[in-house]
Amino acid sequence: MGKTYKPAKSDKFAFGLWTVMNRGADPFGAPTRKPLDPLEAIRRLGEMGVYGYEFHDNDIIPIGTPAAQRDKLIKRAKQIGDSVGIRATMATCNMFSHPVFKDGAFTSNSAKVRAYALQKAMNAIDVGAELGAKVFVFWGGREGTEVDSSKDPAVALKRYREAIDFLCEYVLDNGYDMKFAVEPKPNEPRGDIFLATAGSALAFTYTCAHPEMIGVNPEIEHIRMSGLNSYHEICQLLEAGKLFDIHLGAQKPLRYDQDIRFGAEDLKESFFVVKALEDYKWPGTRAFDAHPYRTENEAGVWDFVEGCMRSYLILREKVAAFNADPEIQGILAEINEGNRALEKLMSGYSRESAAELKARAFDPDALAKKQLRYEKLDQLTQELLLGVR
Image 1 (cartoon, rainbow, N blue to C red):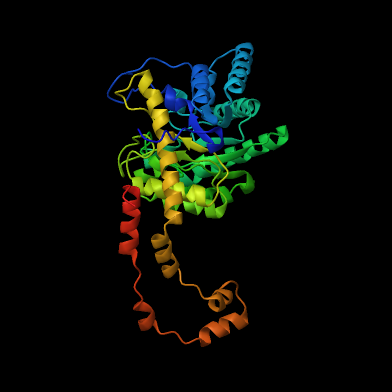
Image 2 (cartoon, rainbow, N blue to C red):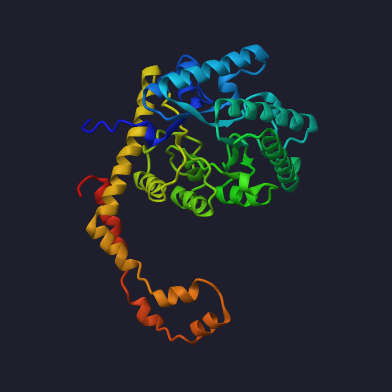
């Protein structure tokens, strides 16, 4: 296989426990793998050089677990994590599997269901805090509709916001070092899910009582399900300072949620996602949220884990090559033509700068004649990714 591209803890890779615990079931077929114990999953991930694990509350603590057993499971997860150098980096609450959430959790039409959802979320936040997770994600997989007459989306979003505001106060009241991230998805399992895209989730964060505590957790697959560009969506969140977590995987556009191994589909888009994270020196974990193919046994699960990390490391190496390539950088310098005087005028409004800009003479025909060598730039990028540069 050539280079090993062996991960180090400093790479800050993370996997959701649900990724390796996935049993290969789909809507048309039964599981193809035996259940994997979550504590064993933590151990094996740590042994493979993974920095962190993400988990749903019920990944580790099944619904109905007595308090004493809950405490034992948390203690054991800590012990195993310490022994193999892995830690909990993100926690979330499963509010989609149990039939009680068949019509939503925070946006349910039932006040009792909404109250139970808040109770479950508070308990999950407690577990996350005990295990040291700094980020808590809300994926509203059931927060949506198939029948538009069943819910007023404005009322549903108001309920969603009230729940998030309540939980922000809960975190502050308990002194937890934790922030929240909303994970957008357009559809599946609901026909239409509220907060469908990174942009809609980003806008929602600013309407909450504690916007500084709330960011976004984009997932490549969910973005591509909408036919959007994951590089663009992620960069918008980076620029806004709202990228609180990220889920890396692969997806054919406009399909059902395929959750394919990272890097297995659009290599160019995956490359630019890695480039954004590395160039901006984003400090968060590079978390993978995908599933091993249904064809795999348990050994294939760990091939999947290795493959996700290996692809990221290969693409990170390609990013360094791109940034050091003199021909590529020469074209980029040529394209990004600077003008200090004009940039100073445009950097902030004043009457004087507006008047000076209005008085400037521009020749749009002459400006339009400049060649932008995007064909060459794209070809060079392609050749670099194909390994011939």
